[in-house]
Amino acid sequence: MTDSPEYLKKRAFFDSLLTIYGRKPVLEALEDPSLPVHKLHLAESNRKDAFISRIEALAETRNIEIAHWDRKGLSRISKNARQDQGVALDLALPRYGTAEAFLEENRDGRYELLALDGITNPQNLGMIIRSACAGGIDGILLPRKGCAQIDPLVIKASVGTLFKTRILRCDQLAPVLVKFAERGARVCALSSHASDTLRTIDDAAPNIFVLGNETHGVSPAVDNACTNRLRIPMQNGVESLNVAITAALISFRHQF
Amino acid sequence: MTDSPEYLKKRAFFDSLLTIYGRKPVLEALEDPSLPVHKLHLAESNRKDAFISRIEALAETRNIEIAHWDRKGLSRISKNARQDQGVALDLALPRYGTAEAFLEENRDGRYELLALDGITNPQNLGMIIRSACAGGIDGILLPRKGCAQIDPLVIKASVGTLFKTRILRCDQLAPVLVKFAERGARVCALSSHASDTLRTIDDAAPNIFVLGNETHGVSPAVDNACTNRLRIPMQNGVESLNVAITAALISFRHQF
Image (cartoon, rainbow over all chains, first blue to last red; front, side):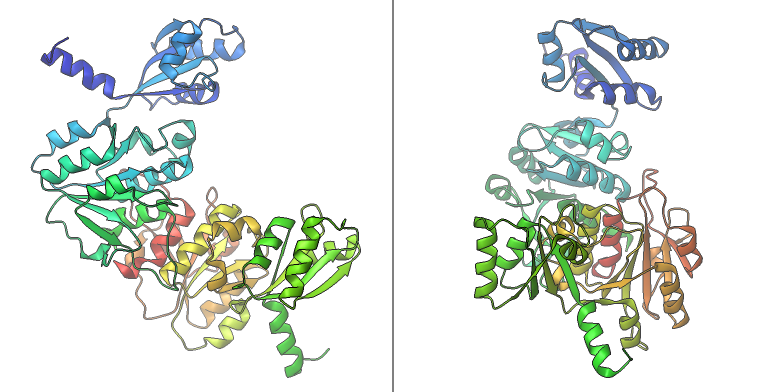
């Protein structure tokens, strides 16, 4: 394959696919007419019980393509053979894309992103998505390495906001942050040890706020890629906040 | 007993006691020298194993009184016979008191309180305490009815902030809110249906912000006691936030 326009278009489409798996999550997604579904994947080994009949009927009603696979084929799609229960579903999310594509589209724009470094708790990831969406953040940089990935727990904790939020995937966070900084973005690590506070950051440049692991904070490689370090001022000698709370305070700071 | 000064002093002391239970939470509390411990309670039926020996030794080192009870007596203290594991511990928390006492002390003052109505999830309660403490809220009104109570899960989720936060207990929330309103406090129900936003509230009067159950919102009885209704403005058609996120946005709103 070459970098033809046709190839790039196809690639952008596949980049927008989010694959979920497991019987209950897939059934719930099929029952929600607001979710844009691309394809249903079933293992040939599934017994044809009431559940499988129900999701097949839903897929047919909605004109959704069904693909049948051996167990190995299905596990390549779900990427989680232990928990897929023989069922996977591709959602085609228009707001689900890559960090690179966002950077190309926003060469000269103003934007505010969150970047997640080592957020491993799915509850926290879901709450961050919900708060960022409600606060009007333009996107969330979610690296494949070291972070929880979008799964049924995250979808549930996001309470319907995942599908309204621009999730920007990348493999590793540090090199992507370097690229954003080269194009003029401020890349701000949140750290309780920083001397500057969140208040010192204006909107004269695009801003990316990097949230680190709850226990270990921002990792050294990612910290190296940051241009600023900020803290949220706290009372009563409190040293840290839950990472989803921090995300919310950043996302809503223009509202107060 | 009469309302003598001696009686009132004693009563204020007992009001400041927080009883925790269970082997691990009690051991952890005894190992933390920053926690002011009043008394250790043990069931006579406990086998004298390494664990019991360890907490007895810690209590002796710290000069903490030990009381021995039959199972029924211990369960009256722990109020949770199923989970106390024969062990309970009274913490004497100077910042743990009653709503009534706070109201007497702050007849003419300015203050900001959170009031919790139907917050049943201990994780949320712990996160609310942590965020409110870090944001500088003056106290949290926690009714005995309908809310999660301070237990080991809440203590853990508060990440050390419970002991720095003024927890104001009451039996039921609605009549207490009426009393605060009579003394000039604004009692503001947070509701996504309100027309006014949080921004419209200034500091010219004491403010109490009432947070309702995540699913059902503020209950009708409590809503009746409120003088104002407020919403947090949200983007992208998001309808609600996690209650701990809402608590944080209120608590930190003067920082931005």
